[in-house]
Each structure stands twice: as C-alpha cells, then as structure tokens.
Image (cartoon, rainbow, N blue to C red; front, side):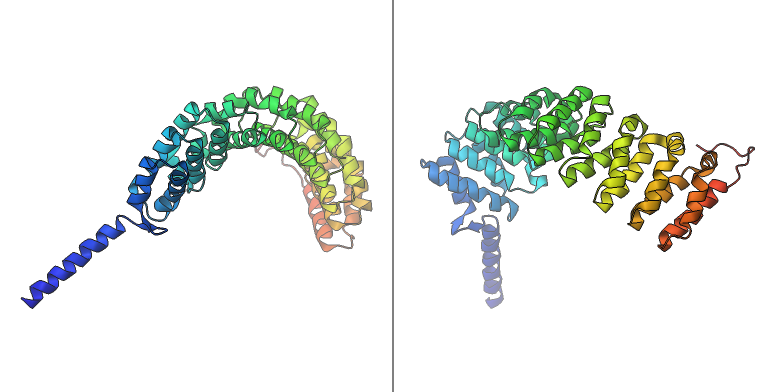
Length: 380
C-alpha cells in the first residue's frame, strides 16, 4: 500500500515537472501567458513586451509557439511598434533560427507600409544571408526610403545576399551620391559583393565615386569593392594607380595590392607602383609595391625593367624590401640571363648584411643559371 502511494506521488511530480518544462517561465510569466498577451491584449505596449519575450522563449527554451506567433504578429499586428519589435526580436536570433522565418520576413516586407518597420526588418535581415536571399526585392525597395538608416541597412542586407542580389545593382547605384556617408559606404560595400551583371559599368561608377569622395572610409570601401569586382578596365587601373599615392595608408595599400592581383592588364600602373616601391615611407607597402610592380609587368616586362628592381634592391634600408626585389628577379629563372645587369646584381646581394637576403640571392642565381633541357616536356 505504501509502495503504491509512493509511486503515485512520483508520477504526479513527474507529470507536473513535464508540464512546467513545456511552459517555461520568463520574468515571472509563463510562456503561454506571453503568447496570450501578444495575441489578445489590447495594449500595444504590452504586446511589444510580449514580442520581446519571444526571443528568449525560443532561443533558450525552444518554445514551439514563439516562432509561429512572431511570424504572425510581424505581418498582421495592427501596431507598427509591435511589428517593429518582432523584427528586432528576429535580429537577435541565431542564423539557423532566423532562416526558419525567411519566407515570413519576405511576406512582411512586401506588405509593410511603415518606414520605421521596414527599417527594423532591414536591420534584422542584414545579419542573415539566407534570409536576405529571400527578401531581395523588398530590400531593394527600401533603398528608396527617405530614412538613411533604413537605406544603409537594406544595402548591407543585399550585400549579405551576395550574387542572389545582383538584380539590385541599378537600385544601389544612385546611393553612391547620397548625402549621408553611411549610405554611400553601404552601397559601395554591396556593389562589390552582389556580382552585378553590368560589372564594368558598376566599376566605372565606383571609380568616379572615388575621385569625388572626401570621406576616407568610403574611399577605402571603393578600393575593396573594385578588387572584388575584378574589372581591369583602363579607367579602373588609372584610378587605382592614382590611389597608390592617396593620403590614407589603407587606401594606398589596398590600391597596390589590387593592382598586383590584376597582373599584366594593369601594366599602365607600373610607374606609380615603382614610385611607391622606391619612395613610400611604409616598409610593408614598399614590399607590396615591389611584388605588384613585377606582377603587372609580367616576366618579359620585368626582364626589360630589371634595372629598376636592382636599384630598389641596392638602396632600400629594409631587408624585407630588398628580399622582395631579389625574389622577383629570381622568379625570372633562365629568362634572367637575357639581361646582363641581373646576375651581377644578385651576386652582389650574396654579401648582403641580412642572411635571408643572402640566401634568397644565392637561390635566385642558381635558378637563373639552371640549364634548361630542350628535350624536357613543357610543364604548364
């Protein structure tokens, strides 16, 4: 009898515990009560509180009604303040949870008339690439919003969508001349990441923006976007060549590295790159400029202008820069024998005060003097 009673007590306790776990308590109120408030309370202020509570109810407790009621209220609640809070709650979700509401976010965007709510939706979506990909069209519409925060948030969200947002390029381009710096910067950031179909046109617009832009943060963003776009047109190369002498160190470095990544199509920038390699006070930039100079010239060009690299190799006080010049000359291999200044200069570097330069010079000499077997297959 006692054992049966004890088992009954245990069963009741287990049932009560299961019921409590299924209806977690947040700030002294059960989850089901928060949901009821959001669905039925006549006070927008209380519904805003309930919408905020849905975040931890889902993230911490996986409460099943939190997502469905968030989606419903985000689209249908009569109060803009409540709908905006739903968007803010979404922005606090981890990516995998936010992705579950991708369709609902798109629907909410499509039907939302209030600018303040569209702004909150855009800010939230900017955190989640998978959600942004489902909301490209409404995000593009937000780019026309008078609120600069909303426009910048929408542009950043489109950037997160990547190539799925390529159709938004025409809507982003007008923002390059927006009066607000954060909007211009966000537009540049997005244009470099959506893989627009009219890439050359976009690159030319960015190059033009660089020439007109007073804010250094935006100029930095332009250089980064042009590297991502990879357009090697004359107008872009000319802009980047000028940027190697920009007043900002990050802009100079970005321009030098971008030109180097372009290779021979950026040959017109060789002289500005050489100037940077020879005169810039930043050791790291001089090193980058040596490598970029060689990259835009290609092997035949380096062979023809070896004297310029030799001069850098002989006069620079920093061994890293001398080492860069040695490496580029050594990379010519047997082609280096065709210019009589190269081998004597490299042999002289074998007496360099820095061991790494000496070792690299010796390796470069061996590489250049290596005999080529005419019968050996051409390895490509």
